[in-house]
Image 1: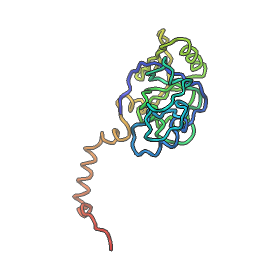
Image 2: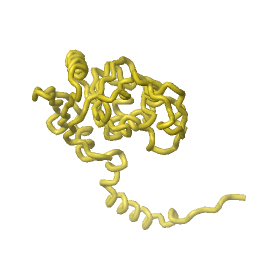
Image 3: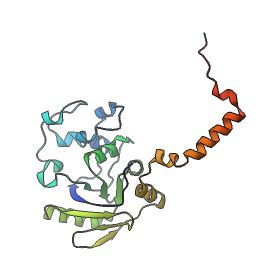
Image 4: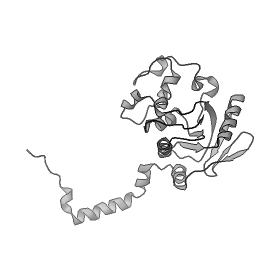
Length: 218
């Protein structure tokens, strides 16, 4: 998992409340058994005027010119500004995959759905909860200034605005540690691989029959 320390990026405003995971990545794209390739289908039903299916070439599709991510001023955005209850609905891990693979590193919103919030941290995406008043002001500033960027400093737990104003945010120490060090669940486990190997060796010495495999019956 990619480390998150300090990130400065262009901000894209998604001015909708209660954005659910089916809007983030529609259900037809969950057929894939891979963990990659979901970025082109992020917000698929809003980004395109035609219906999307797995395997379609994005270059052949009809983009919706009114959707925020299709506007040239937000091309390359890596910080998403959202409204309350972002990520509600079904608990699909594909949602943070799609956001991250599109290019987003952080999401700022007044609130998130719990399961989506947890899944973000497990996949290197930083969800930041800020007060409604702060989010509303950021929406105004993003829309007023083309090229509006923010800096997210996870170590110091602040969002830095272009004028230097800092807004503090909370993050659980364990989640912060994992993001700063790029540790997902597998990475956390692999830190103990020597102990795991040692345990397996001791268990095999004590119970050597565990090394044998059994053929099928019949």
